[in-house]
Image (tube, rainbow, N blue to C red; front, side):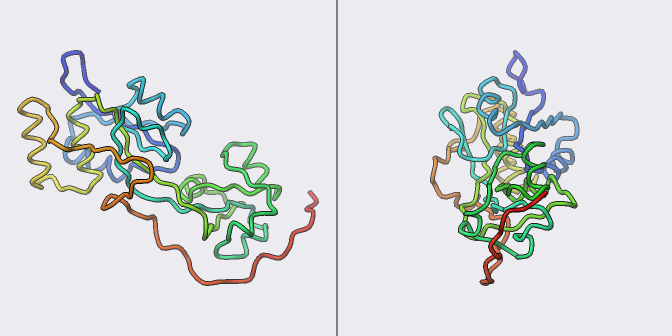
Length: 236
């Protein structure tokens, strides 16, 4: 954030559930050991409200988000998965299709109530793979949904936020080294008055290809296999 005098005194980075910042926090500590970097988790529904209230300088968000007045860089796609009880028929296979979920009660809210239903075998959670992994439980398993659309993680920040440390963090996320020409140019610009390089932070509109910033989580498993056997009423 910036103090009333306009100088940056640190950076606040928010993230939605399933996003891990460990790597980038480590690089930040190496390059800027005396500059505070605060991170906080935010619910997906609260991303826009947090940015509008200047509660964070940047936010790793799961699209779609209203990007009016925001800069956005699309970063990577997330594999959708079916999250089920370990004794559920879906857990027998390496992947599933949307058609195979048609007869199931499919939920998408990750809370205690929905997790209890999944553990009892009464429902299936459809979530990004990163969320299932971050809530790893021995009694649950997740399987990729082969033909479902992926979700996308983007880095968002307000267009009127002039904190010069935003460029430093974006450089880290993009993988620029501390000695790269771009990073050196940005630091020189910050020293001269905190202005960003021209053309930086161009927003990626809805549906715009992620280009070189697009990084898919991993290859989706291939191959066909028999559909799960029909399920009758489960007694519990």
